[in-house]
Image 1 (tube, helix red, strand yellow):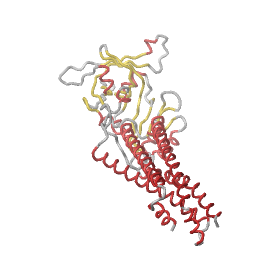
Image 2 (cartoon, rainbow, N blue to C red):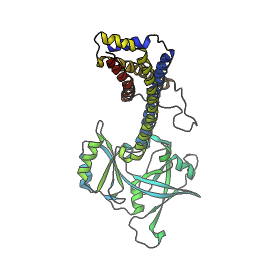
Image 3 (spheres, rainbow, N blue to C red):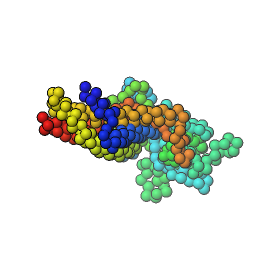
Length: 406
């Protein structure tokens, strides 16, 4: 019944044309704001998925690092227990340290990761190696897979038609007690095998080689490592797996999920997403002021109607609900229109890639979007709440006016 009155008031011709104009402006602003909110959230969802897919090529599902220091000891018994964990599909032992890579006169600082044979099962580096091949060699004859940025910085050549020169890797010795700084460094020779391209942060920083070579150069003990990277079985909850592994190994080890390895990145992305969402919500609040004006003018125009309704037995709550319904109707039409517009634009973007990214230097040349039901629900609830609060004051005034006329 209340919506019936609200609909009649909405479509009825008003004595003051300004009421119609303000009402339609309110609907338009709400539609624009809700459309923008869904679009922004969908674009952020698309970028978040893209970044996660890039980072998942490098970061493992679970990473174990020492709670203090740079290395830890992993006994054969602990390794056997780790293999028996039902959540663990595969794991790779890591020896990692900052190093200086030299190719003739060219040199650059890198993060050198010594990995075992299982590393290609826990990381996507092998599939992202697009020049040369993924091959780490042996401790005696090591090979190096670099990020594409490191390859460009040191002018490494992978063309089989040209002879491949040995690269020089300079690493610190972990247990050296020599007072001479030069004696605390080790110099090893390594051949280039290939390069990978994932994302600039990794391409300019990391290089992969044989774990035996790194441990030998740094004087690691046989059971000493920098990290363990783990691939989980399908449908395994990473947080449950993390807790189980942490309980198994003890407090000397820090067990991190993929999210916890990149907390600052994901937190920044979420902060930016909700900050922009908050700014767009201000547009809805501006629309709410228009709604207050439209409903207030409508209440003044419908004084006689209020009196008639009162004479027919309508009480204060009935009048209140009628004008609240009028406000919710304006908000509902605007919200529904905005959601439909946003859905249409997102579907067009998904199919035709209409809106392009400027610059052309990113991995994709268009804005990625991902529609999520939770975003639609959130935007609808936000718009409904704001319109309800905006409609309350004029509706309350209408109900009090009715009471005073009885």
